[in-house]
Image 1 (tube, rainbow over the protein chains, first blue to last red):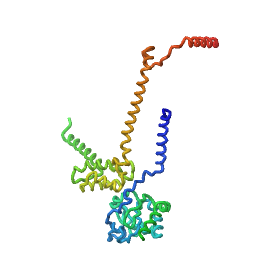
Image 2: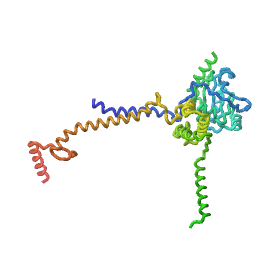
Image 3: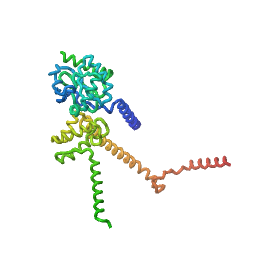
Image 4: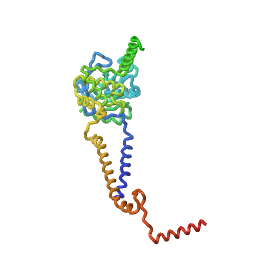
Length: 184
Length: 179
């Protein structure tokens, strides 16, 4: 009995080592998502290209979007990673994925210029110069991408660039499944 | 003797220094309709964590998101929300990550109880070690008392007559070798 007790420190050390080792892969920058499973927050903001038009959360509730599954992509011209992400979003839009842009804390002219130069993958772009919708979404850095189902519920959130690898790993299957459900 | 004008100018200089110091300190001016909100504001931004910069609170950080969140906290205070409501508002958006003082719940109880548990464990170990020493002490003492006053000195049992004979023999041999 006494002899076995001598192994307790060793076992504790191994347990601690295993715990620390398993934490190595985790990204401390990644926050747990508070909004997954929640409805997209209410808002009413101008459209980027059409200041007359007011975009609201009703556009995500299947009323004017016909129950469409959409990606909401938060971007800004000051965001360097968005430059890297943009071509992939263009590609997704060509494949028929509905993407809604959320231009976050940006300048309207610069943003319009950006879309003119790089192509516009967005069905519409919400213009949020104050970052108010950003706060409601818990945005803490661009780019971020949300997958919103036909009922307007957020189903997945990605902080950081969406590229082919991330799309295949995190989005594709869920997206296809949600689209199928919406069509039923 | 210092003349009155020079005294005044010294006073003026002191005043300027004092005021400039104050201006420098409050670069980030926050206006409240009710000054009673200010201590609550200070407390909240000290306890809330900047979501982008990991190891800073909202008060210390000047990242754009912290500036926005400070403004939001101020706005919510003005709207008459309680501290608890403001924290709930922020955690519903930024998750528990934003709280530097996590709430006690099922996934944080370990965090809260671990220091107390470790302290208790330490005390138990300390107590057991002292108990063990006490239980071995009396036997040591009886030997120590019979030979010397000091407890620290190692106790030597007197050699038996047989052993003394062997020792003498050994010493004689080594002396012979060295010669």
